[in-house]
Amino acid sequence: MSDFTIPKFRLPGFVAALGHKLPQWPHGLALVAGLNAALKMKLLPESELTALEDKLFRVQVLDTGGTAHFTYRDGLFRPVFRAEREPDLAFAANLSAYLQLLARQEDPDTLFFNRELEITGDTELGLLVKNMLDAVEWPKLPRLPLPSR
Amino acid sequence: MSSLPDLVCPAGSLPALKAAVDNGADAVYLGYKNDTNARNFAGLNFDAKTMSDGIRYAHSKGREVLMAINTFAQAGRVADWQKAVDGAVDQGVDAIILADVGLLDYARRRHPQQRLHLSVQGSATSYEAINFCQREFGIQRAVLPRVLTLAQVEHVIKNTTVEIEVFGFGSLCVMNEGRCWLSSYACGESPNTVGACSPAKYVKWDKQPGHMDTRLNGILIDRFGDDEPAGYPTLCKGRFEVQGETYYALEEPTSLNVLSILPEIIKIGVRAIKVEGRQRSPAYVTQVTRTLRAALDALAASGERYHVKPAWQAELAKVSEGSQATLGAYNRPWR
Image 1 (cartoon, each protein chain N blue to C red):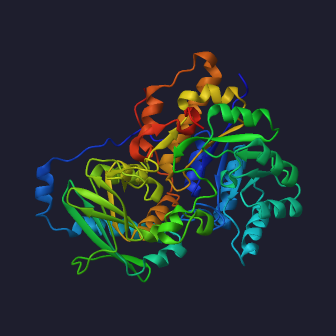
Image 2: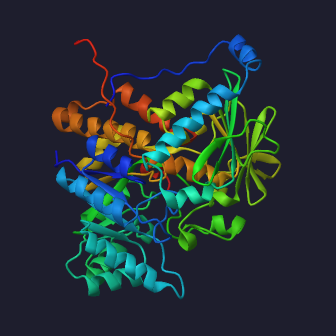
Image 3: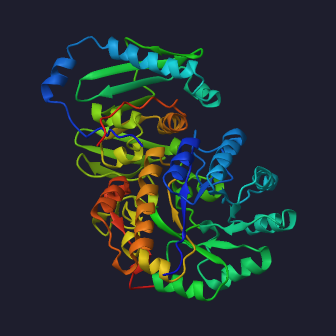
């Protein structure tokens, strides 16, 4: 059990207003690099990856105003800088919800029930992605040394 | 005080299984990646490799693994279900949870040593039905459907030597378990036929300004305002217009939570408490398992002085469908 919990928060409105004006590629690249690192470590199951081929995904961070599009093709996740169609699957949430999901601190269904996570598009694809990420055995990260209490 | 019942927790993936074991489950239940179990969702469940890893992990910590083969064998494909039973025996699971009487019969004849549990999908609500399955198929435990009052559960327990397992936490539906075809009414598929209620390929979340529509095979089944909690997209939890009023005519999106009646459940001799939710993530399994473990251990330690801690209720309320909890049928005055 981690000693650190991510609180629910919402960044102030001006962040999103500013975020919309910033170029959208840096976080898109970071996201894709992370997914490809997981691929490289063979953490994602191949049987499920084939279902992602050529699908367009959109991840929207509401309170930072950031939006990233990416796709999966020929064994790699690739950023899409100019999406020319509606995504097959789209997620929208505040930054804290994404962080809580990544840390496995909250369950996506919980966030969905509480309307903190929005999923639109191909629902089955969404379920597949969710279950694929849930099944990943992330390598154990070294624990940050905490002052003794 | 009788001894504590087993805490039986869901595992839809290897990380969820480990979360259950690490947080105090006495047993985990799981299924194959196919329609032999009632949570046949894309990307969920276990293949042979992850299953044997999971079983090894649970057994190394002294916990049990129960395999759910809880759908009904479909015409022309009975061999697929029989193969699932054979596979579970080969893997060395502690028990197989079955609903189909034909399959119970097969398992009994083919693997007489294998421990068998009657699934909630077997829809046995009376001790007569349970004792029949004991006599004919040698079942050692039955999971009761979520339709009985506590007094009725006690009546069943008094009249059978089969261990009784009841649900302690998780999403509720209309609870016509093992007999429900509502999902088929909308999309031609239901848990009993394909292993999934309201399969995801028929579900559409349609976000509009100010509200979100839920559609099942094109049929509008609910509309949530932006501040309203949402639920699973099943027909039984949809809102319908009935005589000019639009409301949850069948069942509200809600979760069962028995923390407040845990002492009574144990007193009447329930052998195991089950947590619903193989479709949920490791985070949910962690939260619910550790909460129920804490409650059970507190009950063992404090007996009559047991009281429900607000922190437990808060943790469970957060993960509940519709963000509300109920005692379900356990305390219903009518039968």
